[in-house]
Length: 188
Image (cartoon, rainbow, N blue to C red; front, side, top):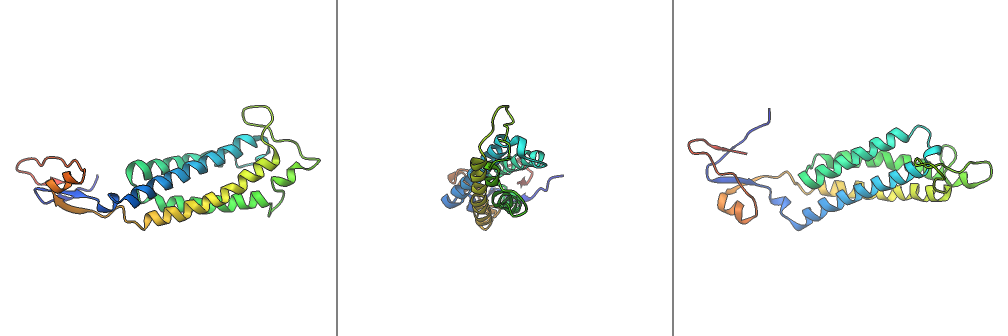
């Protein structure tokens, strides 16, 4: 059952930190960086389909998770999704770093030498070249650093801070508070 909070009659709940231009910009930047991450993951997944071993399902799960997080951050001001985004970005950063420079085996760049087959695309036909896949994989690393930095900066902005203000003041700030029912206290 959702929590209900009693609001003083004649007052409405507002979120002052969400009204700031910096908070609005940070929300948009975090969502945009998450979408860029999804695009990069899909490029590697689709372009190198035949060469990916066990990462195919995980890449799609990562994309879906990032899309859900981007939606909740951008459309719902969900501050709780920001640490989750940062945590997933740390994991993806490590995976991309290992895959990009080949710490535990062959990197994408090593696959351009003789003896390695060209990657096949998910859509059929030739996939992307090994050098292109390596470059995109390494590009994922700084993008994940940006996800971490911006998500944690946005988390520090306190989007969840609430304030009770008179209904007229809430309307001046652009909120559309519900009219209180007569005889019953207003709830938020």
